[in-house]
Image (cartoon, rainbow, N blue to C red; front, side, top):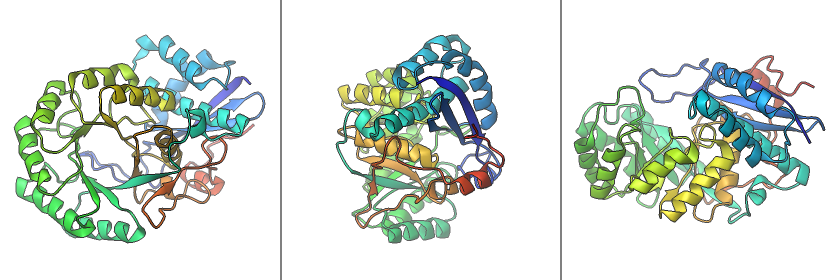
Length: 378
């Protein structure tokens, strides 16, 4: 089965806020779907955490390399793309776009074999995965209301962050964490994300150590992105002095980048993003690497329903990964696939059991968020 074409469709009209200094608007395109077409008519879908303009530019480079390649060999095709674009900007738009292609190829392999991606990745260790609801820290009343509604919907794990955290005062930071803990209860998992990959993040190691001490008082599960993404030495120092687990890695790509941080002892929890770090093939490699270093693997997932489905399959196929991120309130997750995702009465999400990713894009929703997309046109 040969690859005949790859198309991209950016999503707009309902882009959720990201918490960034240069805040996203509803019509900004930061999530792009890709569809890999084959000569047998089978089409696989992937998701890229990047703008459609960058993805399309990357496809202009990547498609000629993999055209005619075997669509049933996702790992090989992805590696061929990595190897032949090494000098074109590894880690940026090229790698992000390879991520979507890789996810789509695993989807194709599953459709052809009749097996879910998680089985193809090595086997299903679990049929359900616990989602942690990601909530931006906004005004205190809004934060409390959002967390209360999500708890009522059945979520039992939460992550708060960005917004004014680390950008206002230590008093305000603690007040937000106290409010969150009081709202979700003592038994719920609560993590905190400073958002150190934001533009011109200015907080340093001393602030991070002091804040980690505060978070320990509220039984926070992990402290995420406390420093700028490339501050390897800072993360090593912070991990050595923090009372709570230190997490990060969402902007890193490729196993080579993660090896530097893992071998240095920078993280207790590593958080690759499957939709930009290299896809399912590369994420699995990073997860295996993390296991050898005794580091937990919890995927970052500020993405789409396709990205969430990929993360669920990945978590199912990894023995120690029992959490996925859920970008709450995003139409690109809640409305994009037929049937959507439902948290059960134990706060869990079912791993899709159908062939491939096991989800089907709702054509009306796709047209609404990407008018005239042509993603599946013959």
